[in-house]
Each structure stands twice: as structure tokens, then as C-alpha cells.
Image (cartoon, rainbow, N blue to C red; front, side):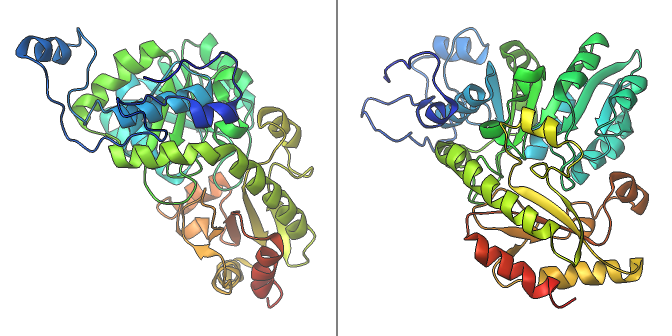
Length: 402
């Protein structure tokens, strides 16, 4: 067994030391339990454990020590009571909706969230009688005006993908709670290294562990953090039946990734700020979207909520004379890079570049993209750990030849 940790540890220490429960062998690294099921000492014990009357691992679809370690560590980093791991970030959002919503319920959601989130709420759950009102990410009055007697959930991600709009978490929490609703915040872009939404009033925090929690683009994973009561009584029963389960191996990779989360986020955020400042001064760039820039409309709010850092994702509009040229010029900038990875993921130590209008938001209608501010000349960069001079040179290949 591990020694109990002292109280009041810093997040960087929790990222390394939280939820390390040693086996009888006394290993210093976390153990990986690759097993589908767990044997029981006898039938009576098995019956009690399956009935939930006694703690104990049963079946890895809903109980595994490695997954539990990842959940405990992430909950500690977010300053929350409990966590449930899922197969992906979208799996966590699916679990959120399946656990909380039923036919006739209403959701208020930012219209600037990830494209798959818009599709899940606006299309899939609409088929089952759940209605969603999409509102401005930043206009608090719109959120308040959208509330109905049937409103059960507020959903936001901050900063948003890809335009980095920042919502006022505390203000939205107050409106949601006054309406008897819960606020869920997708914390994927910041991670708990920069932002802890629960400390600002959020009830539920969503993660795609695929991104910064892993940090090296190795696995797909998700998680949902909330109160012990919500996790145990609302979300785990659904996860147990639906099988939206996080595999032990993927949980172990994310668990190890969290050990370096703080230093990665700080280093990548620092590079992103310098790259954003360079792009803002480039003659072929129309506009840069990055919360760390003083020109960002929610800069002060972002600095207050995000530990004084802007995160590691930025986007920019390439200058184009007309709509016909917009996509061609964006594609040119992307396709002339020789260093950056052309993929729609983010959160990797390798810098990633993508065209949101045809990738992450490609399944949306043109009206939905326009409403979300996703234009065809938009390019997104998720900054990694390469040297800044090399990243500037890579973007210059395309920008300087437009």
C-alpha cells in the first residue's frame, strides 16, 4: 500500500503522486492491469460486489484498478470529488447527456463548441426529444434569455475550438444554478494545468484525454469529473450498461502523460504566445485568434481563468481577396509546411496544423459554420515543443509565397 499524501499539495505534485496505489511488489511506477475480469474469493463476495454492497473489482468494462488510478488523479487535478473514464472525449459527452437528459428536456449550449458536440446535441439527441438552443459563447445575456422551465443543462467549452472564444464560467454557473440546471465545461484546451472550472462554479468537467492529458498523441480517451453523488449514482450506471469504457492500457498511458502535464502546458503556451505575436505582425495574416494576445476580446477574462496563460492552440485567417481564394490560400499555407503534422488532433508535443472548415467542422452545414465563425481562410495550429524559429520558418514557406 502507498503512504498517504499530505494535504494541500500543488497540482504539479498531484500530477505525479496522486492515485499511486502500490501492489504487494512495491513498484514505483503505476501498475497496468490488463485483464478482462477479476476472480472473486467466493460466491457470497461476488454477489455482494455485483450488487454494489461491497467494494471490489469485478469486470474491466466498469471497474479496473488502472482506470481507477487515472480517474482519481484527474479528479485531484481538477479539484473535484470523482471522475469516470470513457473511451473518448465524445464518449464522455455522450455519457453526460445519457445520464442527465430525457425526452422533453432542454439544453443551452454555446454555438462555438466542437463540431461533433454540435452534431450530437443538435441532431442525435434531438431525435430522442431533447431540444438544444445554441447561443453566443460570450454573450451572457443570450444564455440567460435562452433558459426555459425544462432547461437541465448548460454546456460550454472554453476556450473554444478553433476560434479560442472564452466564456465567463462563473457567470454561466450562476445563471444555470438559478435556473435549477447544471453547468458542464469542456476543459480540453486548457487542461487542469491551466484552468479548474469547478473552482469557478462548474458542476461537471469534460475531458478528451486524447489531447493534453496524454500529450503525445498515442491513445484515444475521455473523462467526466463531477461530484461523488453524480458520478456514482448518475454516470457510472449508464457507463456500466452502455460500455462507453476506457481501456486499462489507454488509462495507463493517460495516467503517465499527466505526470508531465504542467511543464508541457507551460512550455507549449509560451511558444504559442510568441508564435501568435509573430503571426499578428505578418502582412499576409488578416487576424489571429489567441487568448494570450492583448487584442483578443476576452484577454483579461482568459488570463484570470487560465492561470495567466493562453494555452497552446491558436488560429488565424489568411488574407484573401474573395471567398473563392480563401480556401485555396489556407490550403497553400498548410500544404507547404514541411515540419508540422497535417491532422485534426491537438495536444501533441508535435505541432499540428489543420483546416477547421473541412476537418473538425466539416460535417456542419455552411450556415452552422458561419454561425460559429468558421471561415474557409481559417487555419488552426496546435503548438508543440519544437523550437520556435523552426515553427516560424515552416509557416513562412506558405505565407511568404501567397
